[in-house]
Length: 260
Length: 241
Image (tube, helix red, strand yellow):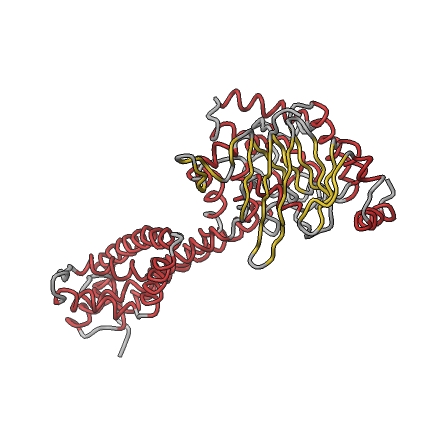
């Protein structure tokens, strides 16, 4: 496989006394689509939050495009990264949150434009043009001047995706992006993610409870259990021919409850 | 005694003149309090336990001492403190004393404003890689400031009513004017009633205005649901511009 875009090397994370991640080793290829599944509390959200620099690993190294994320090299040694280094490396990562986290005081268009203009220093016209294109792509070209509170949950989540995509990240993280939505709105959001995935060039890590969806778009499914990657493989291997009993019992809960 | 309209007309110009000093001093004290409140808030965000403890102690100390004692100390005792003591004129003393006292409350308001911003907003700002400066100016402050405006207004009115304390150190505001008029004519009822009416005439409309502001800001951005996790369309029509 090509040089990985993201690499976790023996990454541990503890919150106080509780060790949430107990040694994660993981390589993600450019353009690879990964689905992270597992019971709540298994640490799957923590894995991507560390990549977005929202949580600092307790130990271990995370690399993005060959560069350590939380560390920088100084005289041949790895030392904790400063804010400048974090900002540099973080630019390759984008994230969509469970609760959208749109900026409520800005219009939909401004939500998308704020980062290209103020982070990348793009001219306003160019940023506006690209933001409009992206919002049209997610089907919200007619809502540009609306405010987040005027949208449905599904629409908000599509804005959040457009906002992240405008920054052209190399890796996109999706943190249970349909969990806060009413069931009838889940479809429209998954549809947009499917479209993004088809375009291909971006790596994607999805923390999800939508098993059917994971099977459809993921190249690889990881089952997290008690802070370790308990099983991994193609969607068929993991979701249909799971080896461990824990994974089988985890999956059976979804089979019985989800009609799709 | 009888109410004398003559005394009313005689004292009115004096009190009117004093009103400008009272108003000016209120603005001066409040500006100082807003500025210094910002300094306190900033100091308290320094992630260094010893600094935080020291600042916390200072704030508690200033807040728990009566403003009158602070004014007296600054005016009478401060000049006698060796090396650092300086003699202050009444106005500077009032601004430093009252402004300093209220800055501790105002820093609390700033803090509550900042804390009212949802955690997800900070995370989104980080995920979009905004610099610290842009994060504050574009994301955090625009959401933190509006809810503090009615609270700041309330403190402005409270401070306005505390300004007469400075008469005790010789600031010639409305109260001082009424008092010296009384000392010369032995008529206290009329001038003091006028002073009270002046305060009422300014405080009450301000309080009404602030209540209106409060309602307006509560309506903005669907306050109960700052990140907008509800799925109901067309409910947030209150937001328009």
